[in-house]
Length: 111
Image 1 (cartoon, rainbow, N blue to C red):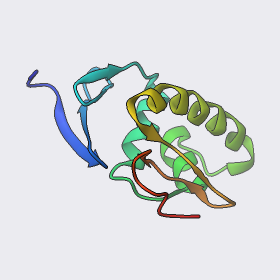
Image 2 (image 1 turned 60 degrees about the vertical axis):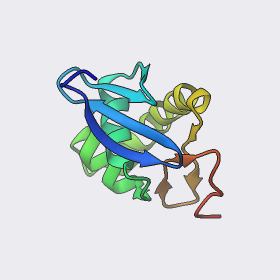
Image 3 (image 1 turned 45 degrees about the vertical axis):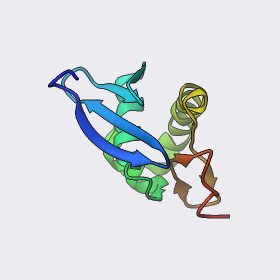
């Protein structure tokens, strides 16, 4: 294992490794290409916790203007979904609240 990769978390049966220096994500040792913002989003969603839209906008865009950044945030999350779904991970939207990262093998913790 590359020493720069650090164990981030386990989501379901999947081990996630992060290389913060290169901003790279690995799911079960398979690399997942992410933009800088996508990587920041994934790190916020670990360890499979529900994260509000407001917190994501504050941390990713360094802004409190939710109205300005909610659409770009949604587009980044949609790209992440496409990249993570083949690895067995999903990011469902929790209506009017935020997002959650979990395994397709797990029942969604939030309806």
